[in-house]
Amino acid sequence: MSAQETAPVVTAFMLIKTTPEWLAMTPHERVDAISTKVMPVVKAKTTGVRSRFYDTEFYSTRVTDVWVWEADDHAAYQLLIDALRETPFWDRYFEIVDLLVGVENGYARTYNVDAVTTVAT
Image 1 (cartoon, rainbow, N blue to C red):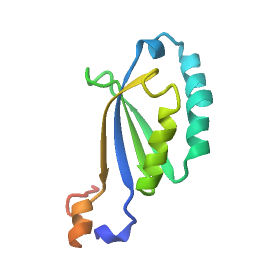
Image 2 (spheres, rainbow, N blue to C red; image 1 turned 120 degrees about the vertical axis):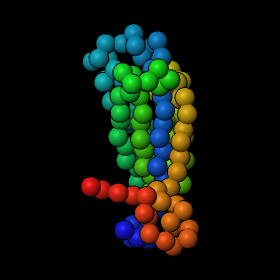
Image 3 (cartoon, rainbow, N blue to C red; image 1 turned 135 degrees about the horizontal axis):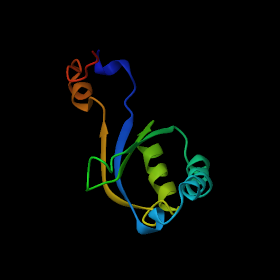
Image 4 (cartoon, helix red, strand yellow; image 1 turned 180 degrees about the vertical axis):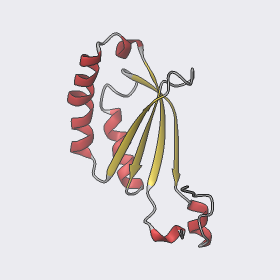
């Protein structure tokens, strides 16, 4: 697949760790907190972002979850981070351990070569 076949998006791997405040909540309270205090802000202040959430606490001691975000461009990603920082998600419910941000097959795009490191079997 040529790297030029799809528009480049910004992908962020948000490595996060739960806080005592988050862990003190019941599962129902956690769902309610994200649904009422985090997602409305994200939806109101961003466009062109998508996410997937991965539990990792049973594989890692460094982080408990990885929230993968895709943004249509760098401006959409910046708006996302600004929106999240305005919610209790940022530093109250979760510690942001690291943000790994990249563009899929950026090297192939830059040099107009096939993305040979992308595979589907």
